Length: 443
Image (cartoon, rainbow, N blue to C red; front, side, top):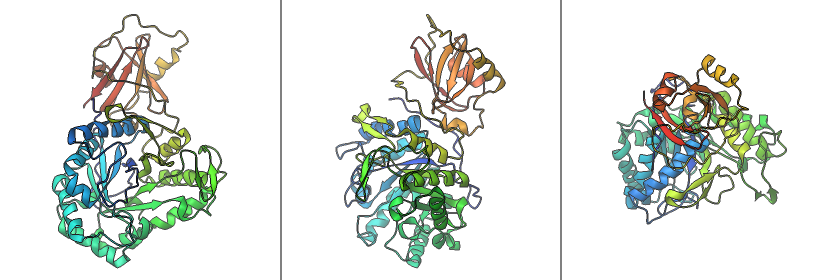
């Protein structure tokens, strides 16, 4: 199976944070939720998977997060049984994830009101993870997800001990949740022992369903972050994307691009606007979790046949709005690219050109070259569709927005795109006669 490699990711330097918007992520979760006492099985995986078969599943899921959603980061859970009993298989998820971008590995304990059942096992788990990935520039370590069972001082000391035990992990790759359910960043960030670290905040509607305005949700979120905006990532936020029931009320599909009529709509709109305003990176909860009405995608099929579909386009629009390193917030156009060779020679025979296509498009491409090598938009539009047009290929972003046209005379497709400033990434070239090839550019 082909793998899309997204290159040239921004590396944040310790003590030099300006924004965290380099994280455009989603969570990939166990269908039972991640608070389990046994091996974590991300949606689509099973106990029977090997490293090889898990790689196929991860490539399908994370690859479609990139293609369909436009992500460059994924957040996955870890717990003690997964590290001790399933590690060789689970590493496939991390390895595939790092080939696409960043991976945030966060600890989930069992659903209980106390810390890990056995701290020795907890430290062994983290040693296993750090030994294999502590030097990987695309791996981040979220030490404890929603550590509500610890007091402020106990949690600070736990984090400080972790830093002492793993001194070679760069602080800018360590993520510390705020106290409570990751609801109070300042209580952790004010401790100078954590200088250079990143922080995590969570926000959900079920913590305060009485907030029914966008401004109300923005203010609630601000109170959880305080003055540490430039070092904080929202590693969980999410709302209803499919029909469902909550607090005795049934909700059909909601249009998050419309003015809010309930707290869900106000929350999604307020959160996405605030994240964009702050240039704060985020991981939507969840990108994929089977059976979860909050899930941004729905899974069909198994293994190499997994296909992810979007249940609520307006929710995806707001997710894109939250990503301040992009300018595209228009709907995604999903196309069944299928399996095609990389940089296959173009077959332009019998190409049928729609006479309705305007020549104005070709003029635009010459005047406004798209996606220069240092353009941040290149990451979200790393998969584009090209259709032949009178010696040109028309270029569209992953959200379906027309970006311009590039002259093409049948030469090597990757060279043609390089000449017009396209950044490193994987592209899809499709002609109006149905011929298709994937093109990979490295600079």
